[in-house]
Image (cartoon, rainbow, N blue to C red; front, top):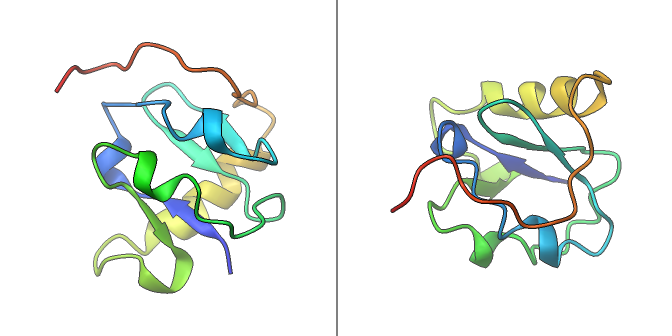
Amino acid sequence: MTFVVTGACDGCKYTDCVVVCPVDCFYEGATMLYINPTECIDCDACVPECPVEAIYEESDVPEGQEDYIEINADESTSGQCPNIVDRKPPLKQP
């Protein structure tokens, strides 16, 4: 299994999660982050770091958010979203 960034990240784009990822599997889109499912090692280090609780284990993605499993896979491998490893200011402050 892999971890998935869901819709709660869209418009916020906090990057606290990327700095704890041991394999650098996060990719940055215009309004949210994505996890590459083939690079994720299922360590869950990112989950407690997300201030908006947007990251879930694939089998625990909330009902109605299942599309984000495919969205993460597609966007993280599209070549359009760069790999992100450093903290950046979020789009929206809490």
